[in-house]
View 1 (cartoon, helix red, strand yellow):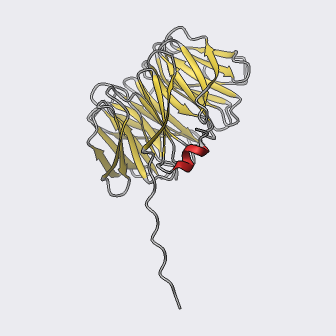
View 2 (cartoon, rainbow, N blue to C red):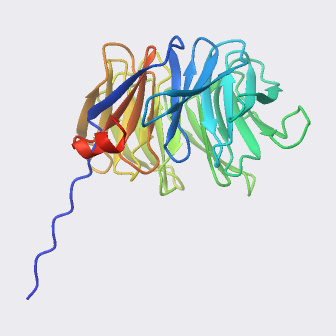
View 3 (tube, rainbow, N blue to C red):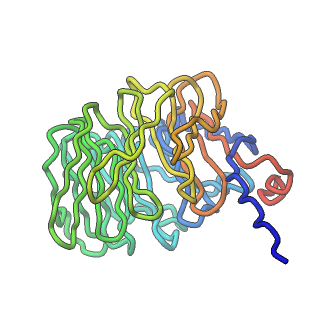
Length: 316
């Protein structure tokens, strides 16, 4: 006698505010999970970078050394190092434990919008308003970049690197995907300035948001448009988009104070997270769990699923 298969549960979404952190860093320009999701980095307009415990909402370390507001940061695979970039045109490599500056990289001609480690944390990649991506060797003492990618015709607003592939988004309206191993470049044209790009977790698709208030999902290898997600407002700010940890939903910041969550396949709006009354500047989705970070003005919010177990697990 066969029993019917249980219906698969609809994926839960982070619709429950677990805690709000007053970062006291001026406006928060970016918020990022570390590699295992236990810690978060907040980038402040007061020139500081802070490391926080997600569970307790307590600050663990403050990193000071930039000369102007910090715009992006990334944590290495073992969480022993952090890199950050700033409007002061520099990229800094930090030792997490001591809080000291390990290296300071100079070479960009304007503010540096985005930064990320490669998988082994041997290279830092940075994208700037000067239209270049620069690759910095974290192990050698040389100060020059080991590679400069200058194909963009305008500011690089966002970059993501996974294994041997680099994805960049530019104000020139193009998503560029570099195969660093093969030395190949693939370009997809989107008619509007791009604010954020990322790969899907399965590596098959790319996601990009742009100033025409549209998030687009493209097939990575063909460039075919697989989905368009609209309803949010993004006309004048560099705001983040991302995918949920299991690639089920597309999320985007919005200028109307919400985070929008769409069903990836259907394209329908699944949830609007009411963050506040200002622009949601940045967001970051936990690498494995249904936990979302949002940044608005001087605060970072931690969102989880409704059940109380989540709050207990988060240590509230």
